Amino acid sequence: MLVTGLEILKKARAEGYGVGAFNTNNMEFTQAILEAAEEMKSPVILALSEGAMKYGGRALTRMVVALAQEARVPVAVHLDHGSSYESVLKALREGFTSVMIDKSHEDFETNVRETKRVVEAAHAVGVTVEAELGRLAGIEEHVAVDEKDALLTNPEEARIFMERTGADYLAVAIGTSHGAYKGKGRPFIDHPRLERIAALVPAPLVLHGASAVPQALVERFRAAGGEIGEASGIHPEDIKKAIALGIAKINTDTDLRLAFTALVRETLGKNPKEFDPRKYLGPAREAVKEVVKSRMELFGSVGKA
Ligand SMILES: O=C(COP(=O)(O)O)NO
Ligand code: NA
Ligand SMILES: [Zn+2]
Picture 1: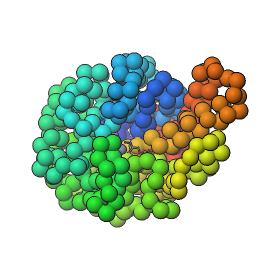
Picture 2: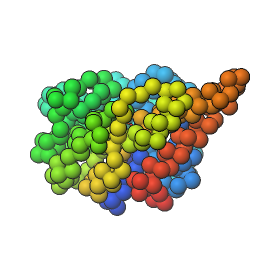
Picture 3: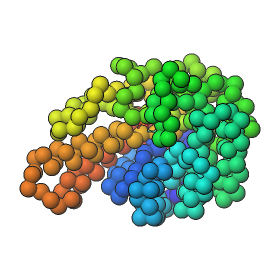
C-alpha cells in the first residue's frame, strides 16, 4: 500500500532497523525492488531523482505510484534530491508521498527558508519531507563538492535546523559520498558525530551514498567488459552501526546500477546474436532484485511490513 515516508521511517527508527530507498528509472528496476520487498515482507521506498523524472516522465511516475498502491507491503514514492520548490510541486502533483528538498549546498539560512517553504506545501497535502544539512564529500546530483570542502553535519545546527523547518527526516553528512568511488579503501564514517546528531534529532535520519560497491560485483562488471577504477563503498558493519545509532533510511543506487549493467553486458557478450530486449533486460532485473533483497537483510527490514 502507498504510505508516506514518515509512516515507514518513524517505525524504523523507533524499532532500530533501516529501510532501503532504492532509485528507479524504469520498469525493470521498479519491478525488481517491489518484488524483493513483497518476498521479504519488507517496507520499501521507491526513489526517483529529477533525472529519473525527466527520463521516464509520466510513464514512470504513473507506473510507480500505481504499483505502490497495489503492493502488499508499505511503499513510499519519494523524490530524491529535489533541487527546487517547483520540482517538489511536480512530484506532489504526481502523487508522491515523500519529497526531498536538497538545499545543503546553500548557506544555513537559505536552507532553512527553502526547506520550510517545501514543508508547508508538502504537509498541506499530507506528504512528508526529507531535508539535508551538511555536504556529502562527492558528486551530489547537482553539486560537485571537493572532498576537502566537504562540510559534515554539525549536531547542534541539525537540532536547530529541524526545529525551525519542521522537516520530517534529515539527511546527514557523516563521511559517505555518492557513486562508486567513496574514498580510498574503507571510507571513513564519523559514527561519534552521528551519535551526537541522533541525541539531538529525534527524527529519522537518512544516509546518502550508502552503496556497498562490493568487489565481487565490480569484478563481474569488469569481466563483462565494463570499465571502472579503484571503486569502494560503505562496509556492511558501518551500515549496521549507523542504523543502531539512528539511521532509518538508506539510499542505494550505485549497487543496483552496477548489477543491472553487469548482467546486460554479460548476457549480450554471451549471445551476440540476441536482439530481443527481454532476453538481456530480464536477467538484469533479477540481478537488481537479488541486490535489493540482500540490502533488506543487512538493514534488518525483512518481515517488518
Ligand atoms: O544517495 C544516493 C545513492 O547513493 P549511492 O551512489 O551510494 O548508491 N541517492 O540519493
Ligand atoms: Na533522498
Ligand atoms: Zn543521495
